[in-house]
Length: 269
Image (tube, rainbow, N blue to C red; front, side):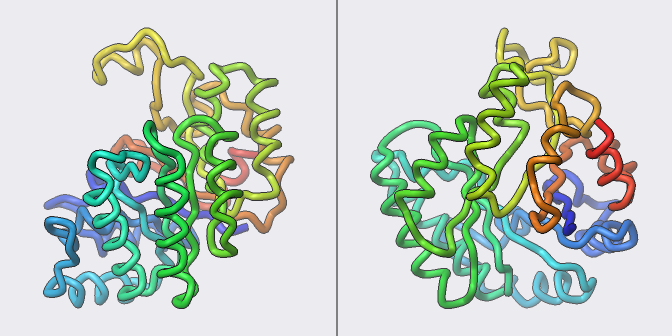
């Protein structure tokens, strides 16, 4: 089973270069990483910064670990007011994937706005990406059903479902039975499983600094630190489905177990 790790921008700093972070993940025997290319200075005002491509390409390929790309979190292709700005950035990520050889782009489905615009936009992006063998993995912002509707209506071979179990658990408001029912809907369409933990609580809304104390929101905890039944979840999927671990806390990321121990942890919960 292929297992990857999301390299959030805060993990790359003056003490840890991108190359050293990638090397750490390779040493821990992870198969791939997820990169946020726009945070590496590769997009400015919606356009690819050509002058920085070579340096990043050398870093990514030099370490020798596979990589996928992440669309900026702010991209909302349902936003009819600023649609052109969102689409311009999204297209630049596709252009970067073509130039740098990333074969998967993960993006969140929109939060609010016109569903038809998002379907039209993803269809166009997928058409641009397909000749380079690039897949678009559409992640559920919350509702599994909502995102599956988009995937099914785009109806492109290179567009699939990225099942974010943390978001699905929040959408089910921590109800384990409802959560597993929702997950079951996405089993056949899933091309990537995104794992992180939380307590399934969306309210009350609190300051980010207080979220863990209250146990609310999209906490991106290490599996086992929240309430998601990963053991039951893992039994629903084949070993051929890649897993992406999404942990946001730099200290927890530094202590991330190796691939084998991570798989054993997920299956044991």
